Each structure stands twice: as C-alpha cells, then as structure tokens.
Image (tube, rainbow, N blue to C red):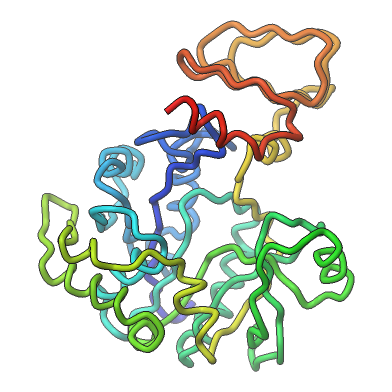
Length: 345
C-alpha cells in the first residue's frame, strides 16, 4: 500500500440478536464469540499500524468508552464519542468532519468476522486506488448461498485496476430473487465496509444529506476532549437525522464503486451463525462453551455462562446462559431472539 489509510471502526449498536450475552454496555462487539479475542479486538488487529494503516479512530457511545479502552490492549487509538445513536451516516460524518480532506478513511463495523485477512488487504489496495480517483468504494462479499438476510450490490462496468461501477443496491430479497442473482453472477452481499477520501465524502454528504453532515460538523466544532476521547457536542449532534450511510449517500451518488472479495466474512448476526462458525465443535457437531455435559445430542450450541448445563437427546438447539437469563430455542428460530430481549429489558 503506497498511501496511509485511516481505519474508522464503528463501535455502536447493542447486538440484541445475540441476547442474553449481548446487551447494554456489554454489546456483541466486545464478546469473545468466535475466538479468545472479542470481535472488536479482531477488527483492530486487521489493520495494524505500520502496515499501511494509521492508528484507528473508534466511534462509540459514552457507555462503550470503558470497554474500548480496556480492549485496545495498549494499542494507540483515537476515541470519537457520539452523544447518542444517530445511525451510520451521522457516525461517519463525525469522522469525516475531523479528518483532513485528502485522508483515506476505511470504515468498518466492529462486530464482523473476516477469516482471510490477506484477501481483505488485497481488496483494500484495489479500493485505495479507486478512492484516490474520488470513487466512493464499498466492499462486496462474494456470496456462497442465496441468503435473504443481506442487501445485495449489483456490479456494472469494470474499472481499470479492479472493481466495478455500482449498478444498483438491492434490499434484502425474497429467496427466489436471491437464487436468481446468485445464478446470474455479478452480485455481492453488502457488508457495510467503505473506503473513500474524506473530502469526497464531505462533498457527497453536503449534496445528498446536508442536515446530517452539518449537524455532525457543528458537533465536532463544539466538542471537547476528555483524556484521550473526543466528545462531540450533544445539542448539535442531536439535530442530525438518523439514517444509514447506504440510504443517505451511497444509493444516491453517481460515482460509487464496489470491490468484490471472498474473505471468509460473516456479520455473526445470530446464534445460528455463531454455531456455524465455531471452530471447536465436537464429533457430533456440538459447539460447547463452559461446563457442559451432552448425551446423544448433535448440532447444538451450548454456552453455559458459569453454570453447569446438561442436555440429553437434543438436536440443533441453542442454550445460552447469562446470569439469571437462560435462552433455549431451536437454532432455526434464532431470528426471534429480539422478542425475548425486548420482553426481558
């Protein structure tokens, strides 16, 4: 990489689909769900300083500042604190407002899994060249199944040096449409990872979502440091409309590129995904964490959470224990977890 890239890690969100372990200030990104390191720590490690990347900017809420500091493991970082959640467009606008115009910003969620980091770095190198030509770059995940849980990106004309013009963004499709796109080729999952020149995104926001950028810009101008954390001004930031960067900018701009990449990506968006990606399953496909006894059971996800859990004759179920909360469900019903999370607030 010939240019220094500034990672921006978006660390908001409560991750309620992984209740009861993920909640409040102990959100999904800070949990060791996939390895001994949390998803946030894995994200930080993907862009090591000195390998073409600057120290990361971590955008988070006040309730997560302590967790970020604890999990940075003495690595250098800048904390940018948003006073209240206003979705990804406003969070990114804060980072843009605090950056020099020519800085390349690599925006990443803090709670994803990427197994093939070298493939990710190769895609970043392609994206960096496009970003220097004032493309707004998004990274598309090469799909391996017709998944209805993701948005899709349709690739248009090929660009010199790699990547494609984005033809259109597609909302989460029904299964038949997802199958058709997979068979046709030229479609990627939308992973919410972006690379752009800060000044180019500033101009795009002023054109497409001016109230969001102006509120963030004022919040930065009136913000202040508390130790190593910069706190955006709450009254100013509160005026920012809540919108995603996809809706606010990427779907409206006429110079958006996609770099497709197969890199072992997952948003780890459900307990089913946690089970699927678990690397230490037993011979019967059980993924077990903690003091667990299983008998005549297969394909289960059991996280004992400090308790002693025994299961007999069970197949494809999840048992998640966290304090006094116990979640038991078929893995096929993992998208219904939010109902329990809402009921047990």
